[in-house]
Image (cartoon, rainbow, N blue to C red; front, side, top):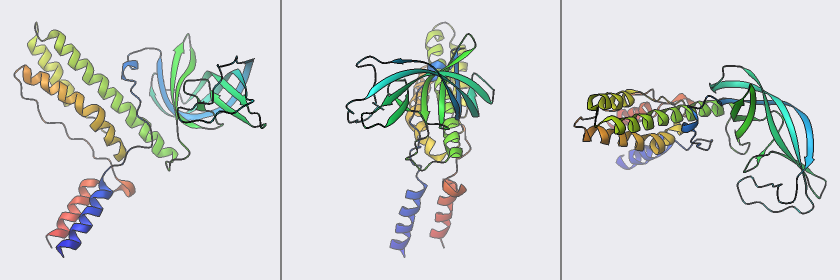
Length: 273
């Protein structure tokens, strides 16, 4: 009986352990204070092409940030383009549900007659009609330009709703990073002349919760937020104050809406019967 329970517990805990999110982590905390910075999750609409010019040797690339076989006879063209962004979740710098964005597109005509389209970014990002992505935009004189694209990877089993929730979590983590860094740096500057003020700033930063929607996003909390909170707590301790415990947060559900704590409580009840 004990062996059977141990096997069940191992399987359930393994199931309950949050897996990494199907979205790469991007640190853009330093951009949040820039008036020109906008961030949205959304779908790319119809593309309108403008001026075209052939890229010189060495300027064109099919490198998407991984191992790539060279394709001989490829002709690269730069195309100035605009498109509508259908915003599913505005995150920063705008509240509009439709945006007009400008970007440079690379069109590669392959030697075998095929064609590939990429955003003219480094590394290149595949460009597809109707693609869902997290869009990093720069506003200049009322014009929005695409500066970075983190797309929904079609190879990963993530639907549009989950991807959007991950985008919300990524934004929340970066906001938290910015808050903790600002509190830490401000306290270090002011602690010699305003100890009470420095303590208040640090305590206020630690009191703020960071609620994440997806269980996999907890990896970002552990890797990015926890070390910064430890730094803030260390400064408080140096100032003679015992830091309060971390505020409780809403626990993100596992697949099927089950929360990890509920699952483990069920296992515990099973073990004592």
